[in-house]
Image (cartoon, rainbow, N blue to C red; front, top):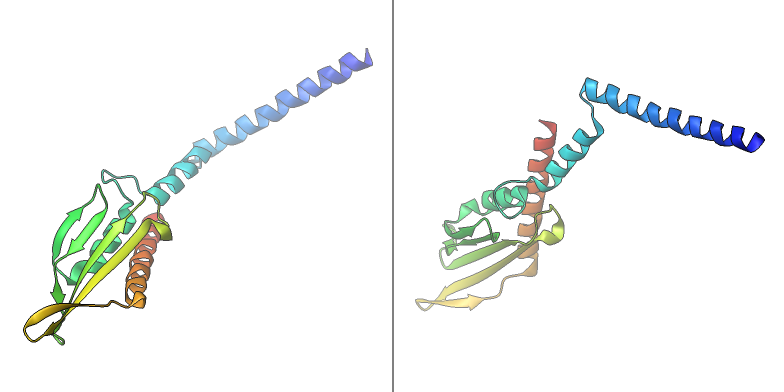
Length: 157
């Protein structure tokens, strides 16, 4: 008898606790704070689901950052941006070409790869010259910072 009473009491408590969760979720839904809304918003902010195949924040940030040079190729599905050769007007004897590749649909540091080629003009001929790793790393940092800023502004407003 005591065992049946204990079992019945435990079952009643389980039903009551389940009802509390249901009531809390119902009140939150009524107030516009449904738990699944928060999950959807954070997922949208993390991935920014769009019709392009890569992370939209990284894509936009890369386009904004590389806007100093004319684009030779841009493929939003493959996530590749290639610039034409760009010569700085203050140093016309040197030119650079930049390629940015977005590797993932998530906004992560390892989802971006930037490479650059540099040439210098010597005796009327363009010759390949080394690009410092710090230059490429700095371009990646600029793109990532811009992408994070774009994401932050989309979440806040």
